[in-house]
Amino acid sequence: MRKLSIKLGILFFIIIFGLEAFMFSYLHSSLVNVRIEEELSALQARGNSHRDILEKHFEEDSISHVILMESEALTDVVIVNQKGDVLGTSFDNDNFKKYLIQQKTELKSEGKVVEDDWKNKPYIITLSPIMQKNETIGYVYMYQETASIHALIGRLNEHFVLAGIIALLLTFVVIVLLTRALTKPLVKMKEATYQISKGNFLVDLPRTSNDELGELAVSIKELARDLNFLKKERNDFLASISHELRTPLTYIKGYADISLRKNIEEEEKEKYLQIIVEESNRLSSLIEDLFELAKIDKNTFLIQKQQINLNELLVKLQIKMLPAFKEKEIDLTIFCPKTTSFYGDPARMEQILFNLLDNAMKYSPVRSKVEVIVRFRKKETEITIKDNGKGIPEEDLPYIFNRFYRVDKSRTRSLGGYGLGLSIVQELVQAQEGTIRVESKLNIGTTFILSFKNLGGEIK
Image (cartoon, rainbow, N blue to C red; front, side, top):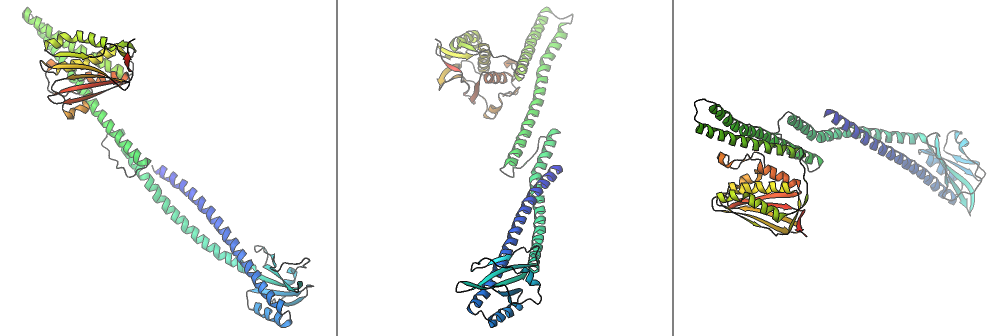
């Protein structure tokens, strides 16, 4: 994670430094240009001010007064007549003469900038025409040394350098804090996933934000919880299957050993062999259920759909199960329209209904009632199996479709079953694009509701 924080820090630094460099360069260039324009405008305005005085009094005293004013200033002035003869200057040498120009065209009254190359020339120069009666009688040259401009720009550069250093330091601090803030939850998530990989699923990742990182933290917590549940389910599964296999094998082995004794009576031997057969059947049933679940898990079982008459299917199933229901004096009633069409796998559907009806019979008291009701609801068909049995506790309802889950942990072996039937039912229902839900109240009864979107209609 340190590599990620370094990469993020470098990336942020490059981006922010690039933006700051661009903004500082643009701002510096703009400020320098503005300052040069201001200096040129101020120099031109100063020249125009002298020009205004000379236009009113173009005489030696006025010229001397202007020269005297500029001799005390940071700028210099040269006043020439229309022919270019120097009438007065604030310079103490003749270097200014090479910057004088022969004006061949008439100037506008606002004058013009003669020299603005402050980077390479010693002066910036402006020119203002002196006019009387719409005729040019002379010119005012204003000079300003570029050294002062360079000094001004130098001070500006110093401020920019200082501001740049402060900005870089602040940028570095912000980037460090930002990368830590971003990578801190990632570090915690990395540690959590490491703990998960080691088999410790009891990780805690608080959701500190509502962004993608917060959602990722929630996802990791849900993953850890699901893996912990699967681990518990696996352990329970192994424990349950070990128990379920051990019990019939113990009976088979024990009674087989007894049956092999020479002094055992034939009647007693027959009794023991019957127990061995029953336990063998139980073991075969368990292995068959496990094999069925294995095929479901690997998606190797086939669903062969076809149009069948649901009423005929239920009636055949009723005939098949009626002796067992009569033995317990339980009334099995079916309410289904005779022309109800079902598009599905008849063998799998019979397996689903048989398991549910078998459960209803096992957990219903003597002289009770079990009903199978088929209804049409908005292009869906509901198959309801309702009994008057002892019901399922509310706290057990969310888990009844889990493998090897038993509501009555201490129920007698006479009831049979391994807690796999409802798991198989749920898988087979979902394989036919259906849903199954359960409603139950203690000492009142249990109702299973099957819903299929591809059911409905009538047989033509």
